[in-house]
Structures are given as C-alpha cells and as structure tokens.
Length: 477
Figure 1: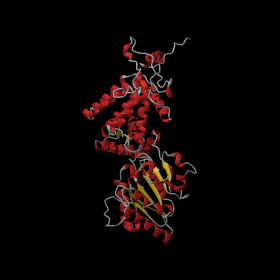
Figure 2 (figure 1 turned 135 degrees about the horizontal axis):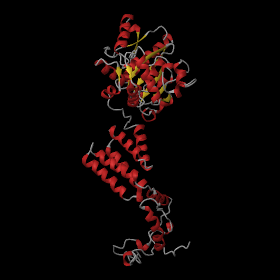
Figure 3 (figure 1 turned 45 degrees about the vertical axis):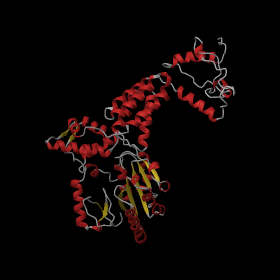
Figure 4 (figure 1 turned 180 degrees about the vertical axis):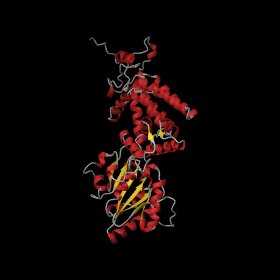
C-alpha cells in the first residue's frame, strides 16, 4: 500500500451511526486511530486471533492449492501482482482461500481495501463505500478494492447498486460466494466480472497447512508434536476445508495443553472433533450434484455409493419427501419391469416417510435404495412411453377403431360404435386376434423388454402375444 499502514481490527469496535465499517476480517487505515492504537491492535491479533486467521497466507508463495488460478499468467495471479485490474467473483467451497486471495489482491500497490458482508450490509453501505472510493480516486488516484463476502445473499437491488462503479472501475470488486454465481448473481454483474472457481483443497494441500501451522511461530510454534495418525484424521475431518482443519487443530492443541501433554495424538483429536463437515446446499449446485450422483449410483447398481449419497442428503437435512420422490421415479425409469416389485417398495418408503418422519424415515429410504440399487435394471418402460408420446406429438394418432369405442349410450350402435368387439375371455387362451391401435400406428412395437430380471420372461412372451393379436403366423427360423 502507498503511504497507508494496514491493520486488522477487532470486531468489538463500535461504529457511529451511518458509518461504513468492514466486517469480520475488516482492514482499516492507521489514520483512523493513530499508530499507538494500531500497534495495540496488531499485538492483540497476534495473541488472540484464531489459528486460521494467524496462518492466513501473506504472499502468493504461501497459498496452497488453486494452481489452475495462480499459475504464471493466470488472471488471478496477474490481479494479485497488481496487473490487469478486473472485478472477480470467487466461487468455491468454504475454507478454500477466497478471503485470503481477496486480501492479497488488496495488497497490490496503491489499493485501499474495504470489506463488507452481505449478511449485515445493505444498499446504503454499498453506496457509501462507492462514494468514498470515487472521492479517493479523484483526489489521489488511489483505487479501492471492495471485498463482499457471501455476495449471493445480496438482493437483486443490492447487486444492481454495484453495477455502475464496477463498470467504471471506481471500485475493483472481489466478491466471494459458496453458491454457484450463475444461480445467485444477477447477469449484468456476472458479465462485468471474471468468474473464478476455487476447488476444495486436496488432502496433500491440507496436510501441508497443518504441518506449517504446527511448526511456525505464528501457529503452534513447535511446542506440540502432532502424531501421524492424528494428522491424517485432521485431514479427513477437513473435507478439503483449510479453515476447518486449522480450527480442529487449534481445539486439539488446547485440549492437549490443558492436560500438560506435549503430543497431539489421535485420541485427542477424536475427543475434540467428532464428525466431518457435510458440503451440501439445498438450493444450489451441491443439491443437484449429489442428487444426480445418488440416482446414477443406483442406476449403476453401486449400492455402497448410493448409500453414501443418501447419507449425505440425510445428514445435510434434505427434505426426505424429495428423496422418496426420486426413488419412486427411479423405480419405474431404471428398474421398471425387470423387477415389478421395485415401484411398490419405493412407494411404500415414501408413505413410511410421510407416516413416521425423520430420523426413523431414513431406514425406509435406505431399504428402498438398497432394493433399487441391487435390482436388475431396465429402461424399457420409459423408452416405451416416450416412443408412444413421440408418435402422438408427431400426429400419428388417428381415430379409435370403431369396435373399441364406447357403446354405453343411446345411439352408439347406430353410429357403428362397439360393434364387432371380441371379448378376450371368451376364448380359452384369453388372447385373440383383434386390432387395438389406430391405423396410423398398427404394427408399432413400443415396449421392448430386456432379458434382465423378470423381463426375461416378458421378452419371450411378447412376440407370441403380438403374433396372436395381430393374427400373424409364427416366423420360421
């Protein structure tokens, strides 16, 4: 920064009404408080800040992961290095470095950093920041980086308030979101920004951060040793989230020190943090991705994968009625007549969920999932009905044959309706020759049973039925 000292300031600071203050990880100019207060704030940060904040990368070289965005010549690297100014939307899971990268962008020469949270800021605060940024740009040429966390929580009106300043580069917008921006950010703001997707950190990247935090002075300073199995457990708990890994490490370190131990072992970590995070959002892309994986795992007969995705949905609080509906659809779409009992099992699971609710409903959902995943598969039902629909929509319909029309009204016989209809139960076999479809689709075979499961018998039976109904002589091989 040019002529500006930057400090991290406590969230406990009170702000006058109408003033604009960065929230959460707010950064402030020293001139607001004076050097003595700023120094105290820095010392307080060093002593009291959570481990994930203390270990936040200070340079690009300390950033782990996101190589696809930080390679030589990549847009984000150029932005962090002070070149190619452009507003960006950082989209990715929690704990992947969005706030860190925004902070590094702000450190490029001649930029002021202001942070807002969509959870606590509105149009008034946004406009105040833009007005101040416009004045600074005009007076001293100093540009402003506006960091907005959780930008998907801004309303359309709040997002629209940013458009002019972003387009004119009055502010350099760095917005972060865990939601797919193509679902949650207005199109004009998307078109004015680079959308950069961050990925969950690899296990290797999380492990590197954990090891660094144990060793470095701003972390645990080497005063505790982390066992290998404890480190591996922390990595598993993290699920690609660096913040979660370091938060768990700090809690385990405090637990170990409270007993006078010098080692953080597996039992200490397990006693401190007992479950991993479940990444799932009921309204965004995780909802659709996990649901898709759930159905495709059942279709692929991988019962274990299907149960995994079911567990993720259940644990994340997905509506069990939604899960049950997907199972009912799948029972006909991908199992069908290969196992005619599958639909009954799925419907029963849906009824059970409605009757008993959760958490017990998970058992019925699991039973239906196992039944469908292990059942023989056939898509002949959906293929058949879609083929019939295609013909109908294409105009291949025509009048119902006269002998099949309703004859239960006065005058029907005078019109020739229901005359000549042959009743199948009058013959021993229960099947006889008679035209059922309209002329336009005579001879069409919509249903093509497979040789899997219960459809194997149907695959043998269907040709015989069609020959009798259509009055065709048996084919000779």
